[in-house]
Amino acid sequence: MAKIKCPYCGHENILGSDACEKCLHSFTQKDIPQPTKEKLQKKIMTERVADFISKVPPILVSPETSLQEVIDKMHAFPMKGCVLVCGSNKKLLGILSLRDILLKVAGIVKDLSKHPVKNIMTPNPECLDKDAPLAYALHKMSIGKFRHVPVLDNGIPIGVVSTRDIIEYLYTGSKNPSK
Image 1 (tube, helix red, strand yellow):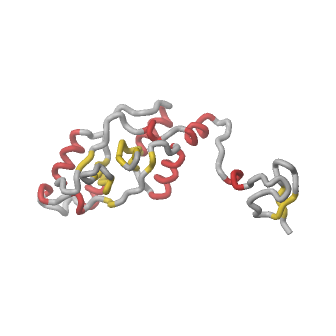
Image 2 (image 1 turned 180 degrees about the horizontal axis):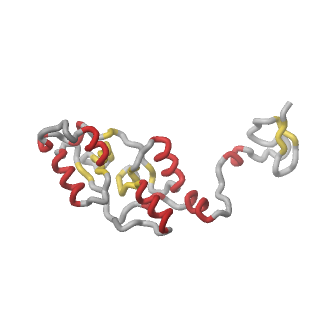
Image 3 (image 1 turned 180 degrees about the vertical axis):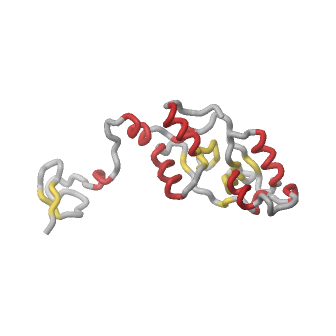
């Protein structure tokens, strides 16, 4: 039978045990990734996503906002790659990215002023809490193939962490882009 040695007391335990039979020390914490001494890895695992969102607040629109108005707002802030769709209570309902507009609207919708954003937004997008580590954002973006993930504070959008923000940080080492 396969055994695992307790790193704390040296007792041989059955492989797959959650805790040492002798000292009762938990083995589950061994599965949680811990940063090494490498500076970049430590930063990725300890920096908060709130530190990577733009100083410029996100573009917030209502579900009834026309696509034309959304495009105009995005044109006014070219560094913003998405808009967040919120209800009257400021709770996030959806997200609409520039890519969504290109793939779902361009060449298909004739009169943009007559189509509300709710018809093409991605409802109930994946989000991150402002205190989540940067590693969570990278993982979520990688698994879901997202370029933008809304950042919430008590359920209210305060920003968006984007691949651009993270790449800029990794390249320059400076947080909180001024976009």
